[in-house]
Amino acid sequence: MNGMIRRDFLKASVPAVAMPLLASQACDAHAAEAEPAAAAAGTPGIVDTNVHLFDWPFRSLKYRGTAELIAKLRKHRVTEAWAGSFEAVLHKNLDATNARLAEECRSRGDGLLLPFGSVNPVWPDWEEDLRRCHEEYKMSGLRLYPNYHNYRLDRPEVLQLVGRATERRLIVQIAVEMEDERVHHPVINTPPVDAAPLVDILKQVPTARIQLLNGLTALSRAKASGLVQETHVVFDIANLEGTGAVGRLIDGKHWSIRSQVSVGRLLFGSHAPFFPSEAAVLRLFESPLEREQLLAIMQGNARRLLGRS
Image 1: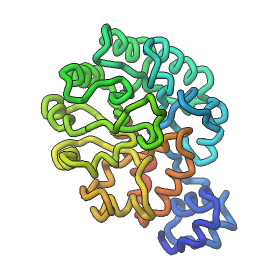
Image 2 (image 1 turned 45 degrees about the vertical axis):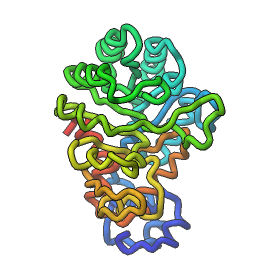
Image 3 (image 1 turned 180 degrees about the vertical axis):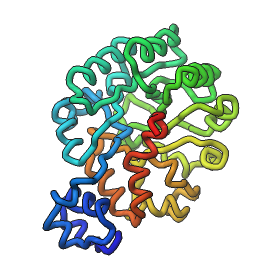
C-alpha cells in the first residue's frame, strides 16, 4: 500500500490511513497518523452505491435511523449514498414504500441520499410504479429483489422492465442476496438470485445499466462466467471476502472467484446498515491498489454509471 505496512494500517483509524494514501503516494504511515487533517484536504469522497433506509424485517440494526446512518457514512467520507428501502423487501404496496423513501431522502437526507425505488415486474401495474419512480419521485434508478419477490430473471417481464427502465435512462440494481441464506428466518427461503439470465437480457437491451448488489459471490457459481465475459454488468464490493480481495479480483487471482473483473466494473458498496460501513472501507484500502484504481472504485465508476462523467 504505497509503503504503508499492514500493521500500521490496522492500528490507525480508517480516515487517518485512507486520506493520506490518496493525498500522496509518498507519505508513510507515521506521517499519516500525525497529520490526517492536512492530508485530507484534497481527498475526494466516496459514493456508496448500496445502502438501505428503515427497518430490516428480521432484526433491529444499529444504524437503522436515517440521521444515525448519515452520520456514520459521513464519518467515512461518503459524500453520496444510493439508498433503497428495507421495506421494499416484504411490503406489497411498493408505491407507498417508494414515496416514503423519496420523501425521507428529500427531507432528511442532508444532501447525501439518492433514492432508488423498487418495482416488482410480476405484480399487476408495475409499469405505473416504474413511471412514478421516474417522473414523480425523480429517482435515478431501481433496486430489485427477485428472490424475495419470488421471480427468476429469465421471466419475460424482467426483460420488459429492463427495457422500459433503459428507455428512461434508469440504472437497474439487482440485489443478489441480502443476507447469508444459512441465517435466514426459518419461514423464509430465499437463495441467492441466479444472475446468469442477464447475459441474454443484455444481448437484447445492450445499453442497459445494470449493477449487481452483494453479487460478487454469483461469479463463483456455475454458468456465471458469462456475466464478466459477455456483459458490462458492474458489481459492488460489499460481500467480497478475504484479505486483499479487491486486488486479487482485479488480477484474476481470487480464491473462489475465477473470473477476472476489471477495476472499471467495481463500485464501492457497503450494504449499510446491514453490514458495518467500516468493513467495505477496510476491504478497499487494505488491497494493494494504485491511486487511480482507488479513485475509480471510490467514486469514478459510480459517477460514470450515473452519467455524470
